[in-house]
Structures are given as C-alpha cells and as structure tokens.
Length: 233
Length: 233
DNA sequence: TTTAGTTATTGTTTATTTTACACTAACTTA
DNA sequence: TAAGTTAGTGTAAAATAAACAATAACTAAA
Image 1 (cartoon, rainbow over the protein chains, first blue to last red):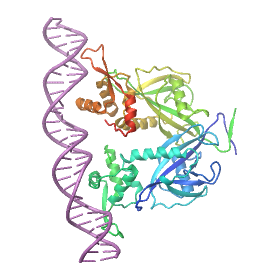
Image 2 (spheres, chains in turn purple, cyan, orange, green):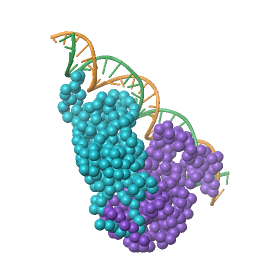
Image 3 (cartoon, chains in turn green, orange, purple, blue):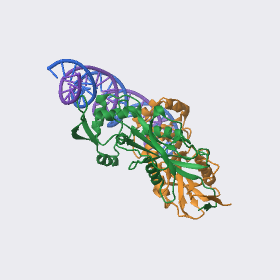
Image 4 (cartoon, protein in one colour):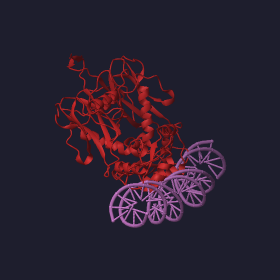
C-alpha cells in the first residue's frame, strides 16, 4: 500500500542509547546495549536498538517499542537526547533519527533477542565493536550528556539495583565521572541531601564486614525538586 | 510532482525560539520573536518562525533558512532544543518538529518581514499573544533550558551588544534568572573568570558617571573550556 | 561655577562550604 | 582465634560565598 505526498519527506527513526552498569563487578564499568543487524544496510554490524516511527505512536512510544522488540527491555525511563539529521547518515536515503537514552542496572534487567535482531548484547567502552550508521557519534553525545547530567541530577541511582551500599554508589560515580572521590566527604555530601533511606538490612555473603543497604527516596526527591533543590556531586 | 513511499511518513518541520534582549530599556526584559501566519492552519495567529525541512538541507540549515526568510535574521548561533512529536500537534496530520533556540541582542539585529509571513514581531513574556500549534509548550521548554544554561555557560553575552557595561551584564542576569544579585559580589565573580576585556572606552551621553565598556573574550573562553573550566553565576 | 542628582567603582569581615586526612568496627575464612 | 578485608566515622584548615556602604565621576539645573 503506497503512500503519496506532494512534497518529499525524510524517513523518521528513533535510536536508543542504553547505558548499563553492573555494580557487582570488581572492575565496574559502563556498558552500552547494541543489537546485531540482520537486515541490510549494515547487516551483521552492531547498532543501537531503534527503528522507524509509526504514524500512530509518539516518538517516545516508538523508542520504547523498538527497545522492547529488539532487546526485551521494558519499563525503562527514556529521555530524549538529540535529533540527528545530516544528509548522508543512512545509505537508504534521507533519514532523520531522534535519539533517546536510558540508564539501567545490568543485573536487574534480562536481555532477550527479539525478532528484528539476531542478538542483543552489552559492550563495555573498551571493547566497542564497529557500528552501523552514525551510531558512534550518537553514543559520544550520549556519554557527554550522561557525564554532564550525573553531576547535577541524582540519576546515578537508576544504574543501581533498588537496594545498594554507599560504596557501590561511590564506585558508580567514580566510574561515570572517571575520578576518585574521598570516601568520608562523599558520604557526608550524600547524607546532607537526605535522599537515601536506610533499609535496616545489610549485605550478605561477603567475606568481610557487611555494608548497610540503602534505597533512593524518589518521592522525597520529587518534592524537593519543586522548590529548586540543587543536587551536586 | 508527487512523492510515493511504501510506508507512511510524518512531515518534518523546524521551529526557532529566538530570545531577544534590549539592554537599553529601563525595564529590561526578555522577548521572543514571532511571525504572524498568513496561511492556514492558524492563519492570522502568531507562531514561531519555522517551516518544512527540505530534502537537501540539514535540520540546522532548514532552521536558519526559515528564520532568514521569515524575519530577515541571519548569522545567529542556533542550538538544538528538543523534538516534538505528539500525534495531535498539527491539524494537517502527523508533523514532527525539531526546535532550535538562539539568543540575540535586539538592538544589533534588524527585523524584516519575509515572504512567508505578514510580519515578524518581538513580544515580551507579559504580552504573549495566542499562539499556533503547540508553540506555547515549545517556548516554555526553551525558557527552562535558557535558565538552566545561563548559569553554567557564559551564553548571556550573546544577548548583549559587542561592548557592554558591567551593570548591563548584571541586569541581564537578574532579568533572565529573575533574582537580584549583589553588585560587588557579581563583579568579583565575573572578574575572577578573566573572560572580559576592558576596551578602555566608556559609555557616552548618559546623565551621570560614564561606565567602562567591556567585550567578551570568546577566544579565551574556548581555550579554557577545553581544560574543564567551570563557569557559574 | 556651584550644587543636586544619579550611577560607577571598590574592599573587608563573617559565614558557609569544601577539602584533606587515619583510625576503629564488624564481618568472614583459614 | 587470628588474619584479612571492607565499613564506618570526625575534625581542623583552606577556600569560597555572602553581607554590607562609602567615595568617585559625570550631567544638568540653578
């Protein structure tokens, strides 16, 4: 069924940059989720999850649908990143891509390859594969945004499981920001925001002193946010 | 000449939120540039400058072209803001809009209505007219972005003429951030960044002590930026 | 030419925030 | 029960931010 317009129109896609984090690893690092393309162009190459926007869905809905179809991930909070529109970014012709990004905890999320993709896989930055389209460019911009944002908004918690230790939280910030932080000063600052709730529980099965487990108080953050509350690491 | 595709495609537009500032006014305030639409839909209503993206131009090029055609403004630095894609934002059907924003000095820039618009006009926030499409929403997001950005990047200078006084700079920040700032502390902070060059000249024609004129040292800022320099007001 | 009026320019003291820094507590395993 | 490992905690010094007012320089009116 062909569709005809009086003026030419670019095609419209969405792409998702999903950052994943595994707090259990000794060498914690950020990973990004890619799918292996099973259709041309760039068949066999790795690419960001994404695809064409349908007429009856919003941009964000399209991004969520593609992410679910291609990787099995759902219920992630997607934020719009940037819209890419150079002339030559897709060999099929003029294609505009609206990109989204999200932060997830690797351990809580189960991957499953969908119908459009041979497989979905996490890659750390050191072992990044060759990518389709301008996706290398997209993730560079996403990483820049993540680094900028993590310092002024408490989004780091999205990368951790519901319950986490203060050391895990600190390691996360050290990983994302590529710095090292003073343990006591970090804890003092985090405590001053009063955004964590002590669960009363402690870590189990570790060969040393068990750390207290905390949860992030989303409700309280939303309250504070209204009144111009400033978060900063 | 009709264009046919195997799948339906949304139309793609760009919209420009141009903030203007007049440093000479006693009651300084931010204005936004609108055009009066002379075609349907929303004929006679005010709207952001913008229009359809052509196949042979990038998104930013489209935004610049529409801005020039409709208002006569050119050589402004446009930054991508957000892409709007709700289903019902345009009565003509599914239309995605990539928005851009820019900051200009009202006095330096000459307006001239173009062919697509009956007239272009600056409106201050207090006297905002009824707007076409979802443009009210777009400018709300633009204003949020501006307020967030102006505190961490020295973009305020784009709203002033090449030469300006420290009082003009302070008034600008007070206007955009809707606060009042301490004069001595403000000057101390600005001075500490070493981003201003004293021109040696002073203001003329004022019925009181003439203020020194400064220029913003863009080159120096770009240098400092590379090394993680932090600006904050 | 003097005076009144208006805006520009400048520094110090106090309060707050950030940084630097090291020992004891608690748990597991050998 | 001893050794090993990570968790948890406070204080002093330095840096930064905030509060605050008098003099300088110019124009216009008397």
